[in-house]
Image (cartoon, rainbow, N blue to C red; front, side):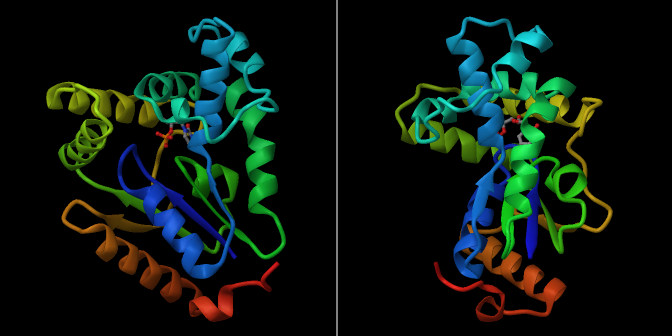
Length: 217
Ligand code: DC
């Protein structure tokens, strides 16, 4: 079973995807991390984010440590959002995501275009969203928690700019797949959102967690 979880920045899609992976016993890929890794490579190489060719050259991820906290920074996220608009970058990262999605036993991937481009035949597609204000509030609280001196209006402006870029790009824009279930987490706790996501998966597949999980390895 392939589960595609798409949605805008800070919508809660990553948290929901990780919880679903644990619940259904499926491997999980955060596809945004690939774009972030390419962005971090590019910055490390002193490359220009305005150059599609430089960005495409930064897509060799063989040396990347996916646990590097720098990958989660706002700077890297901003560059990732910029370079993810380039067709050459999307093409360079496509195969890795398709291979992960196609592994025997299934997988869960979260991102922007999983249900539309990476795995259009996914059995379950969730589009997780929340209002820009709520998402900015979550991101603001998270950044404050790790000690960053950020201001709410800046975080909100950043979220809006990222939404605009992710939605308006020509290559694989953020959009709701026709056959996706919408999950608006604006007024939900994390645990309520996860429960709702589990219920949506079960409704689509008619399966509970025990039936879905492959053999333990
Ligand atoms: O989900 P995130 O914030 O880690 O993603 C960082 C950027 O990567 C996001 O602004 C757009 C891009 N991205 C993408 O274009 N397609 C994906 N499937 C995942 C992320």
